[in-house]
Image 1 (cartoon, helix red, strand yellow):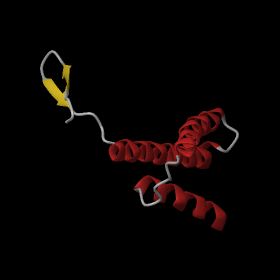
Image 2 (cartoon, helix red, strand yellow):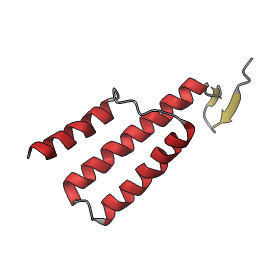
Image 3 (cartoon, one colour):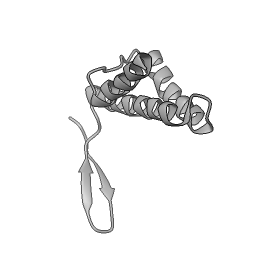
Image 4 (spheres, one colour):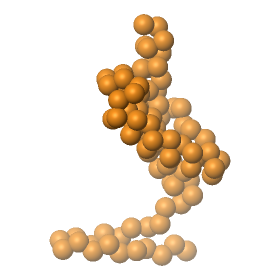
Length: 94
């Protein structure tokens, strides 16, 4: 049985259940996909060598490396991954 943790706010008390393993994996995958899209957008806007892009690449790389170590696959069906793929395809066709 899961025990709920209570988070207190001055206005509201929220019951928060611990995440299941599947929920944790899905959360990590969504976060990685969002960072991948951000990286591709910054590369497109600022170029691959700009400081903003370098920072975005480092942030994405950290979570991507963690996923590899934990054996968590990327979810290519997420909308952020599909949008990033569209940017890559557009760049290749240009």
